[in-house]
Length: 155
Image (tube, rainbow, N blue to C red):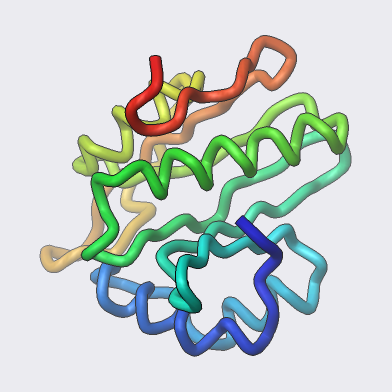
């Protein structure tokens, strides 16, 4: 994984629009970069396969967005990016990382649980969906107790 640059936003936005029903806008990604959030991309052979955005606040951080191109899903790309973001947060002496995930997103919930995240609450009607809205599960990972995730095919 490497740092996202403004030149990456077109590729990142294309992935976001393809994999999210309610995607971030170009402005959301530009704002994240300009505000100094930790924005990373996974790139292979000049093509971005995934991205992640982490917002540090004092001694905690929030994972705002993570996405993987459809063709590269279920290959460990998301797991590797999540692991790297948690490692960066640890090196920055963050105590915890938070995130919200759609309550119906079983694959993401399983990934986050395997990474050491635990559900700490519910945000009612947090996400838009076809029928109006759906709940988000708020999760947290205590970095003092976090060990790096195994990559795909390991452990």
